[in-house]
Image 1 (spheres, one colour):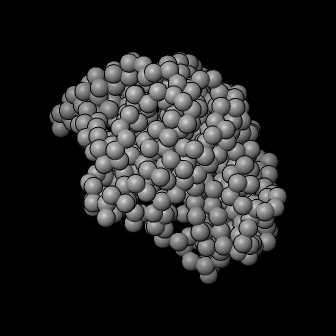
Image 2 (cartoon, helix red, strand yellow):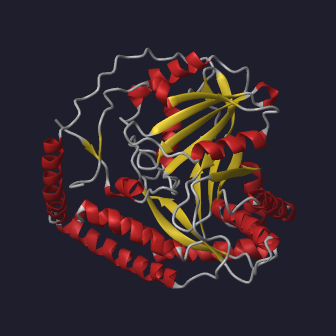
Image 3 (cartoon, helix red, strand yellow):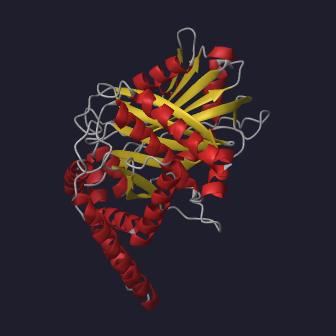
Length: 456
């Protein structure tokens, strides 16, 4: 019998989870009305379960749940009147504050009724050990439909594989420890060409490690960092793909540069409102997809749902007041980060953890995460979504907002998701220390409006 063992990176998202840092990601999707029957939504998901993956000597393994009950994972709730955005965001914060049950498949879908204007919402919550942002987008597309009148596939009978015994897991773990490094070494020796590629890659890794060494320089002490509580606040901001294109055409920079510039203004406004010094930078971890790319350089899904991410560290110039100067400073910095190979180094160091005993991997991930985040103020992740409408039970998805978890000492995290011409910022905050999270969200929208105005 075979088991699906987690990759080192996937396993790390389990190892760094603790009582206050819950490593699940999520999306909040708002749909047109009228709301379908809950049983029809259950049937929609159930019909497509076979299209998605099954939900310490060795790294953890995925095993089928012999007592799987779909109605445990699909929850039905309602908003209090008036069912506006404030009520929905409060519900998201409450749901995200609860850790997923590790004895069951690590996902939940909450169907929310009672939104104003007859709309309804679907909150999909999945552990980061299962998916990263890019593959999470693929998963959303699998569960939903491309047209309002799509034919639902017939539900097939699902039978769980036998649960592995302790002896089977131990034997499989030993085989994995012995086989993985050996197979990688065989691959390195396979050809002279492969060796040349490894040497080139090693040089890039070394260059990236040197660049990442700059993270030992601490950023100024501020309210952006500190101990976290177990509860979360949630806010969002929005702009459009057309507005970002307008800024790019008028002022320059890439799509991500424009997004980071608007976020920079948000943090500038937040720090000013708190009476804190802005003669500084805000350092952010920027996850980078290392998935296969198409001819245009865009990351694409490859049919798997495991994590394929690395990271770069950018410094948001909150000390710059002028929107154009701020954008150009970010563009210049991001070009330098790409040249420094930071993302390559991060990917390589994570892959090398496959050689380490998993108990050391668990300890190492906790220590490395906490040490690094004393010098990192926030996380900013941008995931491109489908630029066409999606449907659930014949209802069009109108808007979609992402959710990113908090960890270490970082009290605020931002995820960006583009869908059908709209670009949405999902902002997670520590409940006890970010009661003013709306200042950040409005500052992001104001930063974008400033650049759009100057682009005309």
